[in-house]
Image 1 (spheres, helix red, strand yellow):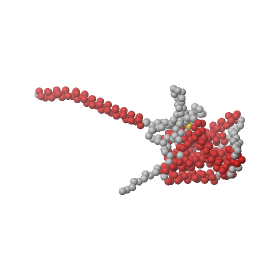
Image 2 (tube, one colour):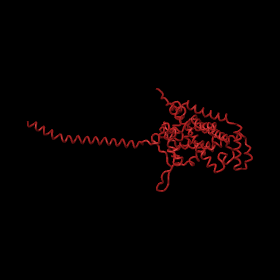
Image 3 (cartoon, rainbow, N blue to C red):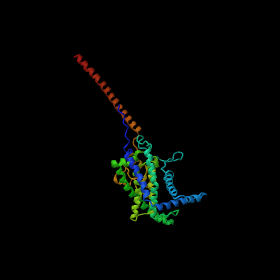
Image 4 (cartoon, rainbow, N blue to C red):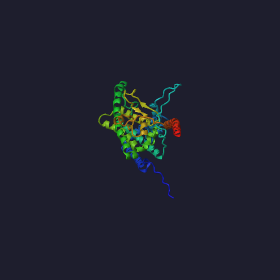
Length: 385
């Protein structure tokens, strides 16, 4: 008796791609630990620890303020970790609310949901142990990324003095006449550059089979994103860290040629984080041209990234569809004919076929009725002869 063979795991869940993803995350954590200025990091951890102990000051202040530097460092990264993910879960959806439906008879309006392209294709992916490991490793890399971004901003003039941290000018007129035009020009420059590079990187991950299997296929297990933070983090670690550090690389590159702008860097990095999470939500959101610069297309639509997860080979830009429109890979969101509609069409076709058969049968009966008398007359004539 031959034993039944166990089914092979999908290609992206085999030992090679999984080990590669884990190794990438560990390599990233190692680089963060190696290339971070330890003295500067300890001073920043002490600054944050002192600030948290003093606001508000408690009876344990004298004991807490002199805590071991290693604990201060752990608390520093823990603070970044908890605050960033709490902000992603609770604050991001509120600061970028979804579109609303028209008011009903009671005057209430409901949040619009991105439609499912097909009820058969978009079953929610059940998380497994590998998914959880990727999410954990990607999340552990985040505090180091955020700290490196803070270091970049410090090199561009940011200080530790609240409330503006030297990011914005203190005079309201300068904020309006200087900062706002800079934000429009520099954020556009950073975003277009980042999206251009990421477009070709993303497109290559789909068109090169080895890259798709080893790097990107894992993220496409969810064909209808509806768990914002989970579906964002549930990505192969190499893809995740490449995309995140590419944002810092773009900023560093422009800083090297004299095009660094501190307020724009903060907005660019923040917008990328916001949209990365919210485009994996089931709620429809968009930045409309009617409110932004009068452009002929929406700057961002959540359903365009849903279309990428459903159709796969389209809409490679991470947030907008600018470069997809330039290079011919843009595909607007559309809903397939649901199965019921197909059944109705098939039924209508069947009924039409039956009607044709009935009509043909009726025509045959009519022809027989006309032919039979003529045959009878001919038979009578033959008998007479």
